[in-house]
Image 1 (spheres, rainbow, N blue to C red):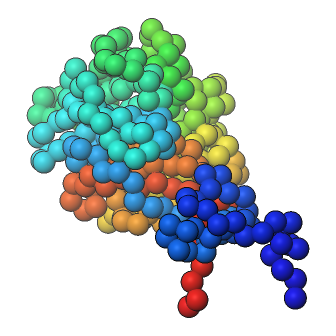
Image 2 (cartoon, rainbow, N blue to C red):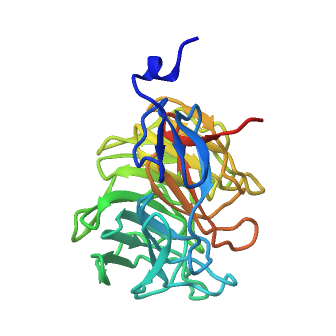
Length: 330
């Protein structure tokens, strides 16, 4: 019978702590826990619980990566309680940092943990409740900068920093749903070509010159997906599940869509490969109006409604990632 050493070229190691970067097929014995363990590659994506945010809220803005995220704004306790709370995530826990200058929710967002943008949003009970306000985050404080040309709420956005962003979609109260798209150059917003389908409560990912817009309401919940090439929006293949108020992360050629509302909250997760959406592992809890960050292989969902306001964070690990498994005799 072939032995492990003959297959792998080494003995099974006895170690006090698990290896930090095991390779596929590696097996070891943990002398601290008295467990035989090994490393395998996942065949499908999966969600796991992360650290809880400090201020439970929904309609949150998000930026950054799975282990270096920024969460800001939102609604807490009731629809009249706009939040200006800002928190950072280090992959384990959330820390409160300096607040937005103006509390609001259902905002557009772009950037990373140390360089982000928050724009537009819902400022109930002020009438009209939609705003054009833009604030820039430089890693320590928020600073008010030049407003959007078109005030709106329930919009979305994307971008790599507080100097290059895209804002699109949304709605006004009172007023129509919006297809308006605006480009941010670090100083001013400039109107560019509209979405093909006006909608709100959609999700956007990517950068200011290469973006993806998906889901939302027209006001009917839709699966529509559009791709932005820096000049125009083009309709591409739809989500498998029509929904609004969903989460998302990634690039226009490699994205993830998760959660949202189909009429009731959903946990459905879909992966975009640049051409089609494919269903993958569901969120642990059906959630809508969450904050989002990360990539299509390492995404973060935090806060939202499930169905009440939640503080829960979930972390997504995509297919093909290395995970540790403990061997048992059962």
